[in-house]
Image (cartoon, rainbow over all chains, first blue to last red; front, side, top):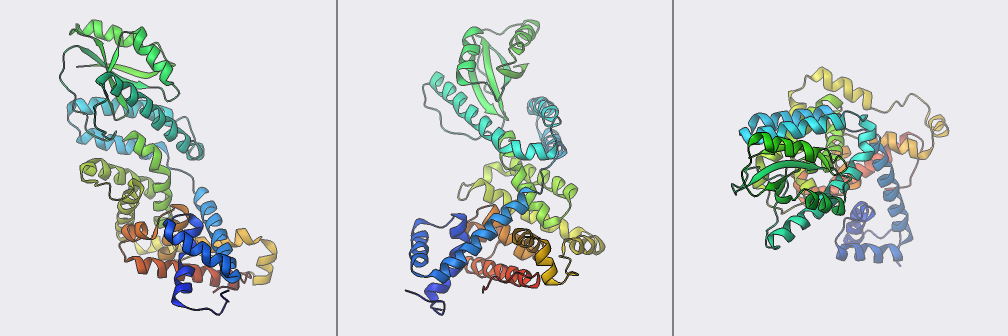
Length: 228
Length: 166
């Protein structure tokens, strides 16, 4: 058994790794080395307990710092809009407006607690919708991030841009698509999906009416705008 | 971009806020961080986690902003962050529980020590990731963390809590 007076290079190395072991960020090999040393050295185990205390209180200190207000979001998307080409600018504007109003309803503290949950919901929905999209395309698409550009493909038909509600389930979205004879043509891009609502190019007025009709289903969609 | 922002904004904000000490400045800086990410998305090579990339950009921007700030403003904020040691240590220990004292001491660490403590414990960054974010060798990451913890023990001792380490 090692003792307090052991100052071998190995023990010093293990001592330095304790904070990462407490945080669970060591490689499996290093974690096993540390675990073995802890089981043989009570003094080292006491030092590990100190690191765990530090970890807990550091998390506490950071968690009480609050969260950024909607101003940070608005500032970001205003800048993105200013640097974007025209089609992208319209999309960014619509997205920023919608999210700004949504974020504006919450206090910074509320956002702090809800951000993680919201992100998980959005990511889950993104995965489900990507599944729908891939199944329609035969599943041979390669992965692309949501932050890629918004240059749109130029296939035939009439299209709308849709932002699905984070609370909408895959079943809701499937029903929505079936009911409206629509299909996901592209997305997500900046959180938006491009839906094909007609195989032919419809007059602008008619497309606007379709967008307004789709917008009625507020359980599934956040907003809908006609696009080319 | 919205998903990325929603997922990481709070942690990046807190990391920046701990560095610059001003909520308004921190908000401005995180907007700039994500704007840079949007501009440079094609350059991200996925060698490291997105959060590591974000924190590295955030750190660079925070340090640049701090260099631009007037000395007077820095002194005022740093003074506000320093532990009030006017109480006798024993009185202090009686007034507050150990956890509260520990939190006060964590806040009172120097910026370099505070940063590494936050990255390791709160942002859950490995030795390699901290080295990438801070731009120092991995061996230096370990020794800096060791000295940050040692300093923490000294601050605790001055506040009446002797941890018996190091």
